[in-house]
Amino acid sequence: MILAFTTMEVVVGILIFTLAILVLVISYKKLLAYLGKGSLPKEKYCVLYSLETEPAAGEIQFYFTSEEKKEVKLQLLDEQYNFLKEIYNKECRADGNIIPFNTTELSNGIYFYCLVTENQKTMKKMTIRN
Image (cartoon, rainbow, N blue to C red; front, top):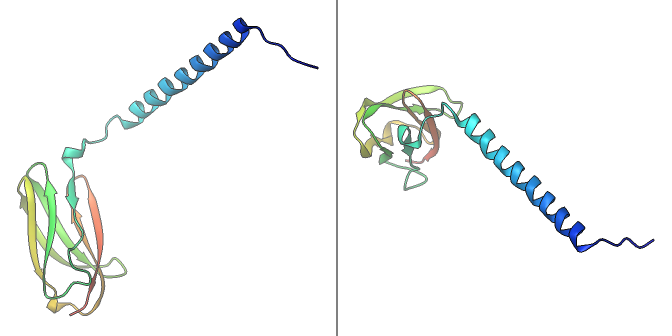
């Protein structure tokens, strides 16, 4: 059996399909906007960068950026995520921030450094080989 469609039926079918896709896209955008309500803008977060040298040894520098001044803690954790030491606990400036740290008091191994603010907690991994 051969199916034959008129030109008008094909055009109407394409228009209905296009309308359905458009409704889905609009619904998806509305859902994303609804789920995003109450989330903080990116300017409210700090960005913690990985160390420049891996494995790290001796004097290292932790680097993070912040769009605004805020209270920041930088903590050192062991391989099992146990708190070892608070490296920094001050108000940071709005811009890039460098925090020096001497690793010679640590034994070789894997550690984590964690940046904590009022609204975030960011963690990076580092290997120490002195």
